[in-house]
Amino acid sequence: MALAPGETHESFIREVDENLRRDQAENFVKRYGSWLIAALVLFIVAAGATLWWQEHKRQQAAEHSEQLLAVLNDVAGGRNGKPVQDKLQAIADQSDDEFAALAQMTQGALAQGNGDRAKALAAYMAVAADKGQPQSVRDAALIRQTAVEFDSMKPEDVIARLQPFTEPGNPWFGTAGEMTGAALLKANRKAEAGRLFARIAEDNNVPGGIRSRAQQLASSLGVDAATGLAGGQ
Image (cartoon, rainbow, N blue to C red):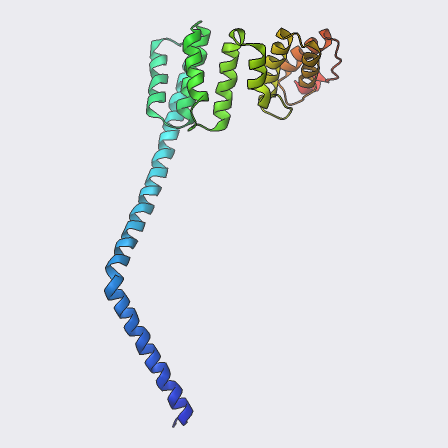
């Protein structure tokens, strides 16, 4: 079937346009093809390296978790001599994640239990200052650090350091609040201490032992804490 003049013209234009695009594509490939291939290869290599690294880190984390669990089982069994200390140091040296911090904190706890205050303090301070660790781990280390330093610190310094943790809902409210209350008592701020102990006693998220002590202290300071402790333990 013959094409009308208009259709012939449009067909010709389309054919020219297609040829032009094909030529442009061929020229583009000739000019930049090697760069495109190189970029694609680099992308594949980078993606593969990232996946390998993620899997490597996952495997390392699993290994460190198992190693730390084994050490904690040793400690629970009363074995906390040099072999255990060496295992903890190996985990701390080989790992760059939170397991290194947990190993250091375990070292600190063992040192504290053996009366080595300086070693315990050094371990807690190192973790608390490590910006590469999760904030929750650093917070735990700072709480332990403050507990070790408490007797040598000025009450106002204890209060200022722990202030971010002394609000209901904070996971460290019970422990930090108890130390803050003791610091308030040392500073002869009894009314504030009583109110804080009452708040601790009334918080169902605080462990029962801490709530029980807080209730007794609040009562001794003339503050009534309606706790319902039986339900919170």
